[in-house]
Image (cartoon, rainbow, N blue to C red; front, side, top):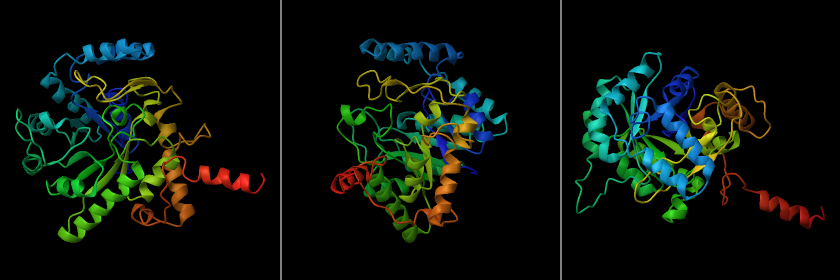
Length: 345
């Protein structure tokens, strides 16, 4: 990929038009096969209803969103959306939950899909249920001729287990996203820096053990160029962005953003938020930046950071020295304030 940045498989971020726009700029957008794009022929009407629901900001907004997602997925729309993206001459990537992975992966591959993503809040090869059969991730990866990305996870051991399935990439991050409420609802999650470092370490061990390289993709919690630079410094091969792209004029949500699990019928783990529109996708990704807060020209920020650190590529960026602090955005800020107070400033 020209740009090691993916767009999250979220309905407020990616539709066919956005996928084409990002693809032409060198990135990769992932379309959600469990979302409104495959439930409605005219998805714009459904998204407009969700945007209005997000404005309400109370219990009714979640109920409205849940109702919209009760419409069943139409498998013919899976093929149609992939074909629409491919006709534009860009890579097509799609995502689904593990339960639908085997069936949707075959449909997607036949439609010409280039990358298939199997994604849930927490994904593991160790599945125990009294009512459902185990999803055989290894079987799915082995049967497809296209690369498979699996996520999400945050631990060394789970990453190693997932790499044994034969997947090409691992999504790292549980609960760091702006529209995700997993940490509040379920009480689980790992700070993103720690998660990336641990999973990247598992990748390096797996490479030495097997000779096969599996990419680590940091997913969630990154909005500014600084966030992205730190993710690569921690060991990421690529990053996946949601709310940062939801701010683009090309996004279907037009400045509104909601978590993938916001529509869950039993236990929603997402919320609808207004992130606003800051500019065109090109400005956000490649610049020139028209804001000074780091939310635009993300690629330029990465290039400048790499140049400042004296590294020539992503692999060298993964080897720079880092200081791990509680938060990816505010490390050192408390220390700076304490230092100023101590110096009488």
